Image (cartoon, rainbow, N blue to C red; front, side, top):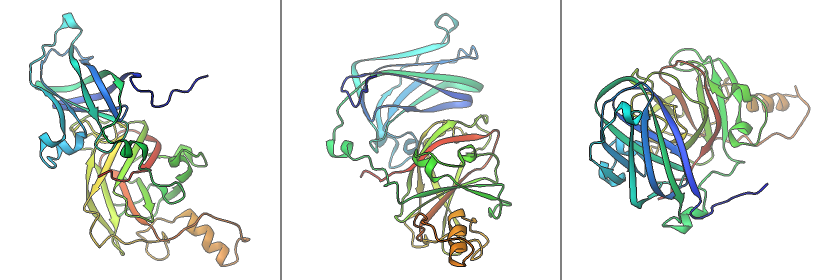
Length: 340
């Protein structure tokens, strides 16, 4: 067996599906090399829809373009406004070939490519596929490429709260999935998922982290446009405060957690964000952290003294999907340092 690592000009060929789309704009987040040359993009549908494409865009971050931050063109790498015809004779396919190839680099040096297409008129529950062919390339900033910007594994923790009642998210069953989220293995793998609108993901770190990489095993199957968004909140010392989300896991049609991708929270620089140890007896809005339960039982003499992971106060962010259709399974969740 051979291992290929970071070989320049290595061939790249990836295809992703949007799931059922309703609307005119589709964003694809594609697993990809952080820096590359793109030779061809091909997009087609499986619903025999003949509506043409009026624009293709390659971006360094799709969600930043959707939110208009700072201005749409700031995150654009390439835009083609030439109308591409779609017909049965081409198997409902449109292709863009680039000569010379288009150089792409992700905004945060992460392994994703962001593509947007605009359909001539609105489609309804149409599934599109995006295939990209290209080659690995050197990044423009070698320092950023050498640093992976992933928080050291002994700091952050990840919990899943399932069946937490009401909008406040109290009670329920809490699972520690930290080892699974880090890719180190461990217990509760089958619980590393969202199963309802009363399920939450909690991510805590001793540092204030506002970029998170969600690696999804089974994505959401909810139809786009039905209002499924990723919601986030931070602990303000006594309750959970909502913050904004810049979400690259969506096609841009209110259908979060369809793709693996980077998620950012907005507004976490506020001083209301407070570190805390999750102890349900201190505040019923806090999840009943299994690690805290074990430590408290040892302190009270209920357990023999054993070595447990550190449990200092952490800055916690929690996420949930506003609407739910089917189980969403996760492979990893990584806190990411912002590059710039």
